[in-house]
Length: 232
Image (cartoon, rainbow, N blue to C red; front, side, top):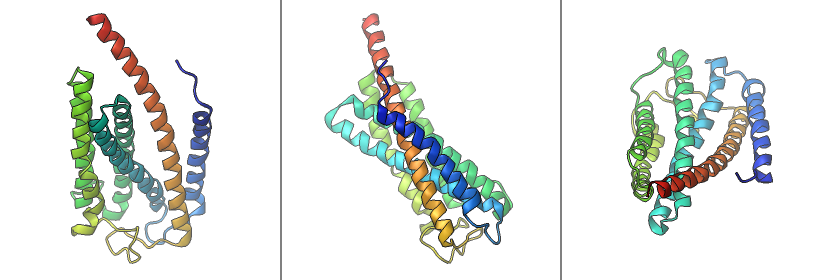
């Protein structure tokens, strides 16, 4: 096994520090929201995980396009890593959203356009792993996976724009000072700072996990190649 790059080790340390800093800003630095109280603090991690979740899905689609062009398996490894990590983060987003929804909407879940499209997006990418698991040939699996992530990526902008295109009770906190939807709120300067810190922290964590997953993917590919040679 290759030794871990120094830059990756530094990134590991930065990830631990950044999540600690983001937690401090969310729980201590940011003021308590007037109407929702302490539960509003879930918002900072909710938005942070949503950001990296959608980011990974978009990056996976880009990697899929590049793979279809040059057939280099490193882009397939990148694609798988991005989807795997983002699927995890997007699930956390949905869970944190439910925790926020309980006091705001008096229910853990409702078939609001944003929630519905988010659930569909999560299921689309869970199905991605089922698709890959059913294909043994590495090149065929990579090709089908690339096309799938390209098509699945369409769900990401739809999910993001749902609260701006449809009538919804989900608040548009970012870019909407009035935050008129049920459970919405206008952010103070300290709240914006806490949100940006969360964005930065989860971006660092995403990059760190992505790098680790790509390295693991490389080892998995070598093991798979050895198995194919033995079976021939």
